[in-house]
Length: 236
Image (cartoon, rainbow, N blue to C red; front, side, top):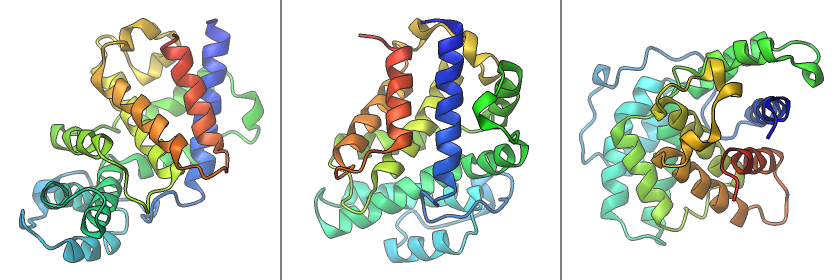
């Protein structure tokens, strides 16, 4: 894999993610949220799923609200039986809360605002500057555990392929954080072999696979490009 090819793949994946974000992948908005601090909000660990759905819908994209809702929704998922309506509702909301809590919505908004007019000719310097917007996107240990549980069971019937691919994107960003010596600012120089044993990267690949099973014959630009990027980073 050449450095030029690697940079082009990352640029394509970023452009696809930005395009998909404009289609409102999850129900949350790209409105600017407060600093991510779940301790700012207190929700009971056994909160009813319907109440959690209400607060998430009213959160205006606030990552702190979403982060505080992860635990009660995770508990609801673990208490429900996969394949049931109760499980699907809790699992869908948990996925939405985890993604919103990472702050990726604000990172996308900042990146969209900084995009050059010609997306087809993003040079490496511009690409690396854009990627730094995602440096704060990450997952807590509870959120990683929640996604691990979701991946181990059938995804909720209401989840779309684009949503699964967005989860994979968040996990990829987490994998970069977990890899010693890696950073988004220098992503184009990352040795792909360094990701081989990263749990978050492996989990991201699994969500890519699951996303592919629910495309319903409608190819996803984001899914295709992320799959190609995963292949570049972890060749057979």
